[in-house]
Amino acid sequence: MFLMCLEINRLGYRQESVVENQWEDNDEFDSEYDIKLEELNDVAEVFYLIGQELQNSNIVQFKVEGFGKLPWPVDVSTDFLTVIEQIPDILKFLDSDLSTYNLEFYEQGIERKIFFRKEEDLIRLNCYGSKSEVTWGQNIEEKPLEKKYLKTMIYEMIKSFVSISNELCPTLTSHRSFQEWKLRIDMPY
Image (tube, rainbow, N blue to C red; front, side, top):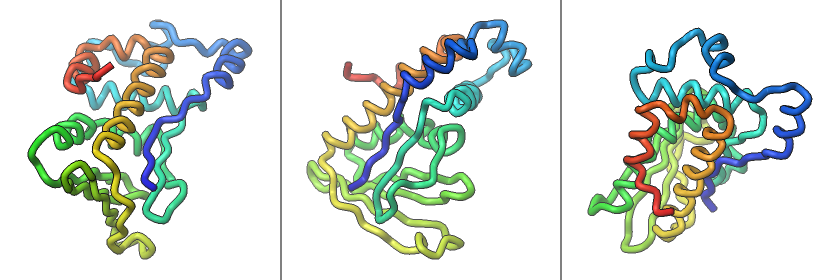
């Protein structure tokens, strides 16, 4: 069965952070990245910095399973960022009359595409791999998901992302482009 989520182990972080004093503050952000918040031009740049923070925290793990592979070899700083940029389009697809959508894991090493196809209240999923990856170079179909289940999975992933990002790097989540991205998501809760 297909699964895509962002797992968070806050307990491990809190224990480490007390010992190593890893909580972010604005001075640390500026000196570590040598960039001013107002110099960030779009949400992709903000996502990149958030992804680095989440990866470096060692408490956040991006998890994808399905299509015969448990789990996929994905990470937060590259693979999750490619997915999170596509989230508004996935949600638009689920709420529209469109019948198909491709979610692309285009980073080197994964290079897979999940093809979503609507059939009434069900979403059929197929996975296509890159030609260079022999075991993924074919069409692999997963058990269909209810549209409601897929939307819930996506919203839970977004909720986890926003929550942990607010906790670990509130300076970045306060950026105008991040706030605009959140408005595009239109979270139901």
